[in-house]
Image 1: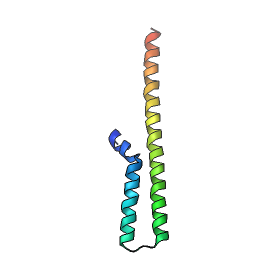
Image 2: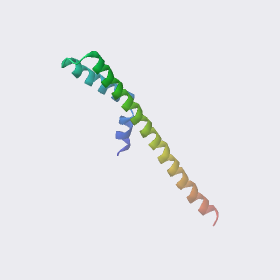
Image 3: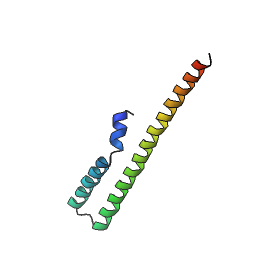
Image 4: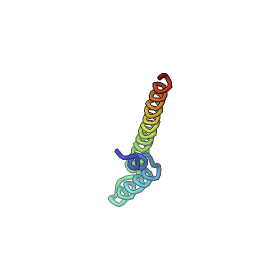
Length: 79
């Protein structure tokens, strides 16, 4: 997955826009308020989980990159 796509998936604005769009569609089709509230809650919860996973992925990738750089520097110093 590209870095740009990951960044967009973790955007709160994206998830709020998606929740607003789906809420509007549910209202258009005459769904009851309780169902709309539950669907909106699930979308925002999913957005939070996705944002957390993407952020942790970035942190892990940086840690691996830094660890790889440290081990290369260490082996060069020992020679």
